[in-house]
Structure formats: structure tokens, C-alpha cells
Amino acid sequence: MTEPLTGEEIERYARHIVLREIGGPGQARLKAARVLVIGAGGLGSPVLAYLAAAGVGLIGIADDDTVSLSNLQRQIVHDNDAVGETKTKSAARAIRRINPHVRVVCHEERITQANALDLMTGYDLVVDGSDSFETREVLALGAERCEIPMVMAAVGRFDGSVTVLAPHLADADGNPNPRLTDLFPQAPPAGAVPSCAEAGVVGALTGVIGTLQAMEVIKMITGAGTPLIGRLLLYDGLEARFDTIRYRRKAQA
Image 1 (cartoon, rainbow, N blue to C red):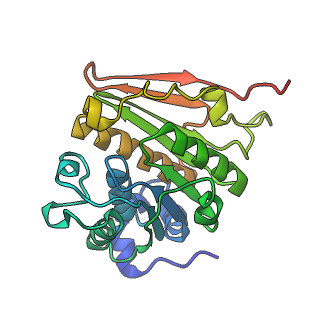
Image 2: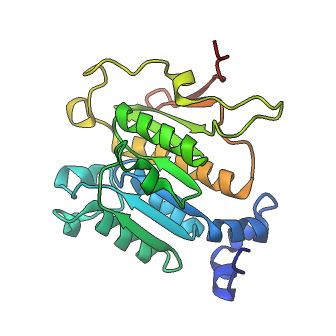
């Protein structure tokens, strides 16, 4: 049973409610949703801000880092006064400022194989805002075992990508949806993908990609549109171009 919207919430989310694809029922589903965001950094910041503004009822934030001055160029939920503070605490404060109706759960820990299932249990969906392929592998496996979708993204310098993994579900033809290993059969060699600190990244790029992630979360929760399952959306910021690569579940040998 979803909790009914209050009069204040109906006014707050009026622009959602008038959308045929969302409406009152979709907004009620957002209110009832529990979303776990891994990382309160460049990607996690716009995800958290827009999910809070959208009225997602409970948002979990998992991050074991603290805010540094070099984060502020792109991690927009944090400000100068938050430098030295844990990112979860700073992000939770920003969420409450955006929307006091949203409940926040802080997980001040790095996700690992040992704790992934415990962290994800009880959530309806997980968002990957991490900065390493190894973490994405752990998240993808944990999300599949918990039978929840995962909205995954990555950024580098001026380009980024977004996709949705839901291998526990089937497509319209009854075929199982692809896994992370169907998109990336092998992890990149160590050192092949430089970190943001090494290669740099445009702050606004993380806003573009993180906002696309938030859009996919809203679609998955409300049932609006077609999520990026089996499709990798690529964005080239320098050329202002979007491309899409389709991928599918590989047949078992």
C-alpha cells in the first residue's frame, strides 16, 4: 500500500502530477520508493538532488569519503562550509534543504563484496555513482542477487555513459536482460582508465550524466517511457553528440 500524497505534496509535485506518464499514481510510487545511491560525488550529487526534488521517499547514501576543496568544482550538493565533513552528512543536509519530506539513511562505508548485499537489502533500486570498475562489478552482482535494477554511469574528461542493468528481469520477448559482463566481458587492465584526479573532468559533465541517471531512476519507479536496459547511452560533451550502443544477454555455452 502506498501512502497517499498530502495537500502540500500535491502542490509541490504538481508539475509531475499533470504529466500523463506519471500522474498521481506515479508520484505516489516515487514517495514509496527506496533508492540507494553509491557515492555522493560528481555523479551522486545531481542524482541525489533531483531524486530528492522528485519526492523519492527514502534515499540511502553510501560513501566513506570526506569533502575536499577540489570536490567543489563538480560535487554540487557540497559547499565550502562542508570541507572536511563526511560526504554523507553534507549530502543529507542538502537533501533535507531541498525537500524535507524525504527520509535519508547514511551509510558511511565503502561498498565491498562483504557488505554489498547487506547494504542493498530493503532498497528498490541502486544507483552507481562510484569511480571504479571494480566497485561497479560488486554493485552489479549484488543488485542482481537482490533482484533490483541498477542505474550505472561513468565519466571521463569530456564524455560519459549511462545504462540500466536489470538481469533479474526479462524483455518483452521473454529473453533475460543483459548483465554487466555482457557489456564488458573483461575488466579494463589496471591503470588503463585514469582517475579524475589524473586526467581531469569538466564539472558540468557530471551534471549531465548524473541527471540522466536520475531520469532513468524516475522512469523505472513510475513506469514512464523505456529505460536504458540493453542500451548504453554515450555522450560526447565536446561535440555535443549522443550515441547509443545496443547490447544483449549472451547465450550460455
